[in-house]
Amino acid sequence: MLNNQDKEMKNILSIDIGGSNIKACLLSPEGVALSEYTKLPTPEKATPESVLIVIKQLAATMGEFGQISVGFPGYVKLGVVYTAANLAQDKWRGIEFGQMISDLIGKPVRMINDADQQGLGLVDGKGFEIVLTLGTGFGTALLFDGELLPHLELAHLPVNKTKDYDDYIGDKALKKLGEKEWNERVERVIDIYKTVFNFDKLYLGGGNAKYIDFKLEDNVKIVSNREGIKGGAILWKIKEKYHLITLHPKKP
Image (cartoon, helix red, strand yellow):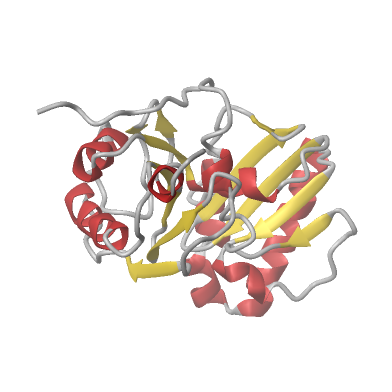
């Protein structure tokens, strides 16, 4: 029978790195929240080093855990960052950030795109489901029967000669255009996704989803970040494939 310390070491520190805030929560292996959903502001100059400092601060408040899940706002492959559009420019490409977190905290790490991690916690696991996150930027996750598809940066598909979806309906667009025109753009994007992907269910998350004011079809649902947080636990249950690996602390 496991003692309390052994049980605690099976807990998971789930981290969600965003362009505005870095959030953390302690989860049981089943995805039950064991701590408050805590957040700190993303550093103004969000370099890898400054983001690591915030992660260390959050980890120190969470009690005992045995592994770490990280949702990162960009394209991640084998724990290495390739894009980070809403963090410090020209500072992230090729950074082995998953390994850096593992070495800093001294625990195994799995790191994927932030929308992918949230998607694992949100979907029903039936058919083709898409998660769109409306926050500082625009995130996407695609899952079929609950299984993540290889990550596609659909946020960076061009809308016109100068804008991609990230520019078109990201936070800067909301603030510049106002809620009315921003809603028109979001509705247009949902119509495009419906035509192109023929999804069974679409989930709209992220901090700006609360501003949606148009009628949604029955298979489109607004969700909160808290609803998707258990994705950090599910991440440790899925197989290592599609460029997902477990990173272990390097021995000194």
